[in-house]
Image (cartoon, rainbow, N blue to C red; front, side, top):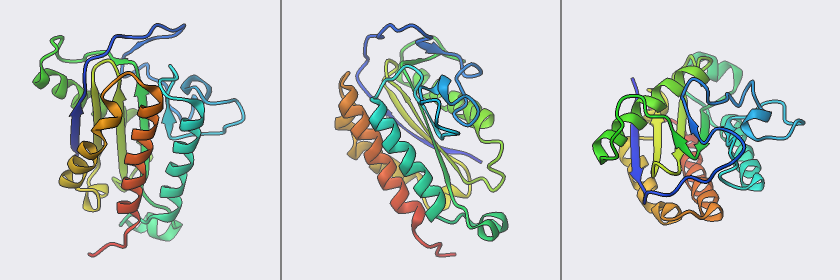
Length: 205
């Protein structure tokens, strides 16, 4: 049902803040219902991006949020509900300093990959219950774990394949090779831009 792609980055030291820096998946805020907990301003009604620790700048979060809405508005997934309602693919973004490990505690590449996969799956269940057409794309960025991970549901994978995600992730690796919040914001925007281009393409089926 799900597909995913991962990029491992250099390991970084955690930056302390006044809130959690290592997030359990069930405690990470939902940007649809917990907008302010996700670091957004009170005048934002709902969102599809959550950055509670402000890993990237507020301006970058706002820019990414606009891009996510634009993808939803200007793309069309393949089920009858999307076609009839003239809605499209839902891309959601979770940004955190560090994910709470669900399965493994070691820092081996294989264990981190496994944990990122499971973490993304559970987060997609908490966030994406409304995605009845299997049109969800979830981008997970866990800075101190050194991971950028994209999960796609079945319908989204028709246009955003594993091979495409791998290439896009590797093409943007330079933005994540260091603890630079400006570059990380640029990298996420670049990936979302490319995802949007692919998801907006007319279906060939």
